[in-house]
Image (tube, rainbow, N blue to C red; front, side, top):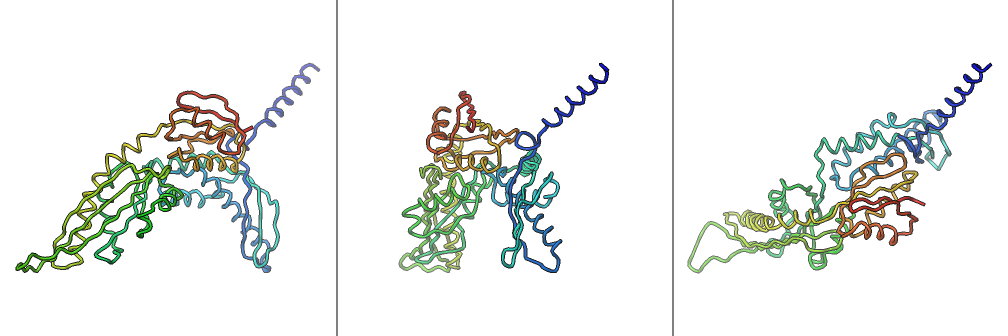
Length: 368
């Protein structure tokens, strides 16, 4: 009888232990809600419903992948990584069930709740970024290039800047061609660069004008003089972190080629003056390890990221790990102390956090 009781007790404990194993926010997976719309097909209802579920599952995986893509990853690399994940959607869905489905005009609507293997997606994205040597800092390059009174769309100045900065430890991203308004008031350009994930934006203004030949001198060559002024702004606070200016000439039988040579030479010389100040600005921020506990779900994780993204003092952040409902970030900020950073996170935004611990390099907060 005693032996039977011990067997029953052991079985009860085993069942209890199994019941306590969770895959959701406390484990490797995360329950995610997602929606889809597919064309309504009354001739093949079964396949249509299946397509709706698969599309919603892809949306769920995209939602998870989106929060792990580094804020500093280049746009092209981010797209490649996300495509790699989404192409294998089925491998990241542990289970799912349909919450709602119905016809919506000419489309069929599906809403699902799916268990997505968050840790697996996070690990693959981090490895992909490491393999691709994803650079930590994005810099948007914009320019206004003039030849005489005409706007040049050749982007010779941008190309010169790329040549000078291509081997630096940051990623250059092609930006807009600017107008006089952008040069006089660069703030909208800076705001747009920040929204696109750039930590800095280079604003180049260059104008090439023909040089008159000396009296009595004749030559088959045309000469142009270019004046280049280049500024680099920090997108978090609009501050000018680097400046370069140069005037150089270009000579060629073809006037347009002479102007291009002048623009390229002036911009290349001016861009060389940016290297040291930009690197100094990149390295000026303090790095903090910020952990948010009891996040609970992907929606709240995105809320945390929005807080970090919208704080002007924060120059860059990366989601290092998300497991057991805790998100670990590496945050680069122009803030002197961790107490100040924690206060800005808590006070400026209407989110109820509790301070768990603060050390000189680390902050641990918890959702209430």
